[in-house]
Amino acid sequence: MRSFSLIFKQFSRSVLLVACFAFLGTQAHAQGDAAKGEALFKSKCTACHKVESEVVGPALGKLVTEETDDKYLTKWIQNNQALIAAKNPKAVAIFNQYQQKNMTIFADLSDGDVANILAYIRADWKAKSAAPAPGTATGAPAEEKGPSKILIFSLLGVIVIAFIIILVLNRVIATLERMLVKNQGALLVETAEGEAVEQVDKLAWLKKLARNKKFVFFVLICGTLFVGVWGFIGMWTTNVHQGYQPVQPIKFPHDLHAGAMQIDCQYCHSGAYKSKNASIPSLNVCMNCHKTVKTESPEIHKIYDALGYDPKTQKYDSTKSRPMQWIRIHNLPDLAYFNHSQHVKVGKIKCQTCHGPVQTMKEVYQYSPLTMKWCIQCHKRTAVDYKDNAYYTNLEQVHKLLKDGKTPTAALMGGIECGKCHY
Image (cartoon, rainbow, N blue to C red; front, top):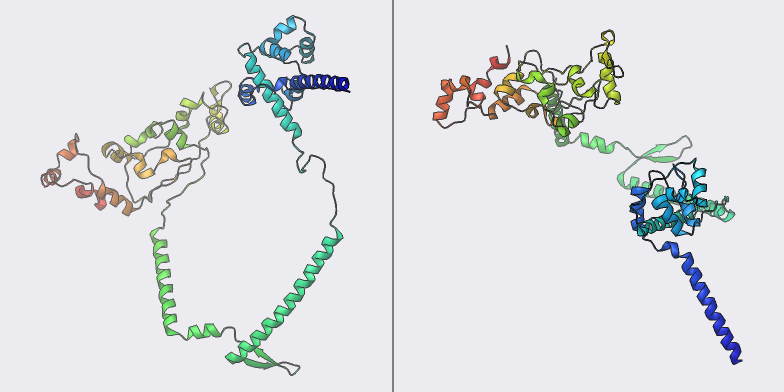
């Protein structure tokens, strides 16, 4: 008996030892760090491989999981061309399978790096293989079953009970309404069958309010104020287009050009500092950059079409050119005179003062109201920069204001005289 126990003990030790080696053998390829391997996989492998599907190279999930020889995989990843040159059967088979296309050599990857990559591929493939199919809890197709009879009868019972409750509540409500009508002295109307039916005057509360003189006076006052304010706002904002943002024939993002690229406004609107009008830039100004920049953009091709320009031959065809129909946004009435150069060059006013933060606008819109009141307020608060300006320094009024310690504003210098803007 003792010898049998010794034999069994030795046999169990052997079985445990073999099982342990088998377990270590199956887990040998899982010693890498999957988190580090994910970063390496995305930087080194994603150009040609995916875990679950074939791209330029094979799908790596199933391939790497079934391949248990990590030493071979390490040599293949680090220098596959050396294995092919050495006539390795596996390497030659893969090389011929993918039409003799050489894989990139990753000699910079250490054995540990390769182990991390393999660990990530196997972990990701295991997770994706174990994931259930969409719409099911276990991945198996859901069995279609109709509603049970118990559910149908239960729903019918709920509907019947609800119907009975509604009937009872209606009777209770009708009884309460009769009691309320009797207490308020309701009218009795006789029907064709000779039954007396109680009738309530639903407009009684409105007639009562109409007899209330204070309430009627309050309503008239509120109505008069509302109509007056509405009419005043309507007349005051007539021909004021603040917020006007038309759709232009070409989408020109000011936030990109004036904001991100920091292109000066006067590069395109060159007339602002030397002319009455700021001027709309010609398409030739656009071509200074877009003859080579963003040539694939459909918006840029609208410029090419308007100029009759062929980007392939880089030649212009004047017979195909046509004017670009820009839509004007800022438009003063004809009775108002405004000179851009006087404000930009002499007054040194920034474009954003009137046109708003154009450097942040995707599409330009009218930022300011451009009313006479708005202009006068600007003239009252804007100080005149009289330094190094012969016109202002020679004005006697400026000297008097400076002697009195006052700030010479545009309004004090005649900036609100009618003839300054209206002629």
